[in-house]
Image 1 (cartoon, rainbow, N blue to C red):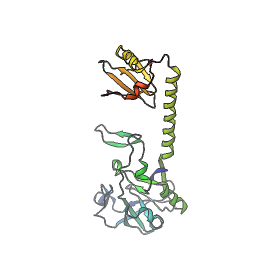
Image 2 (image 1 turned 90 degrees about the horizontal axis):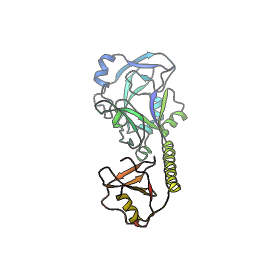
Image 3 (image 1 turned 90 degrees about the vertical axis):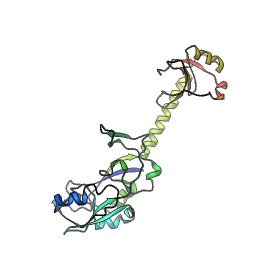
Image 4 (image 1 turned 120 degrees about the horizontal axis):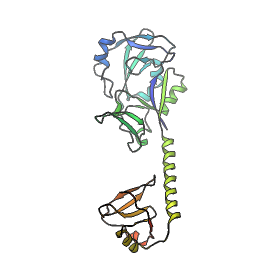
Length: 272
């Protein structure tokens, strides 16, 4: 499954603006299309900004999506209840501004990479990652982090547009769930390689009690994915091997009883 950013193609297609842009934009458009119903709407008068080929979703200088009547009819089932359809006045076609009110808290922050301002506010994403359970049955949506700037659609929406020959739609791929699966598998394979190296390079093995005496003497010991060593203050920490070959360390209250049945060998200490 893929997620696409929705936009309108400007190259070669006609574009729109408002007849009274300076008057109407601050009242009816600015800060009105942010995931909530637009209760102040009136039928604003639009005009051609630049000439070009006919488009089913002409670019609007405000950045707000506009669909014509054909696009509304074709995509009706996908946008019903998710989008407010707000009529514009335009002499050459029936046009509607779209206010997307379907807002999904669906970013997977374990995998996404964000861009932030100095104050810590999210301003964009270097890499998008979505929670599959939150988006797999959706068609068009916004996210809380970018309410005023981005609109996202799924494969089903894009396929419907293509199948019906709608013109002027621009889709920018931002996420592919299959790449996430591939990346996860690659990370798992790297993890297995680290485990194999631990097994391949091990020397003499010791039972747990004897190995713990070595830890108390300042050595580091490993068995499979587990590592034990002292930190700089002398506390014995338990490390769990990660996919990148490093260890996640904790200061355990107790050690699992299974440790007594495992064989341990000495390795270089980690820098903790």
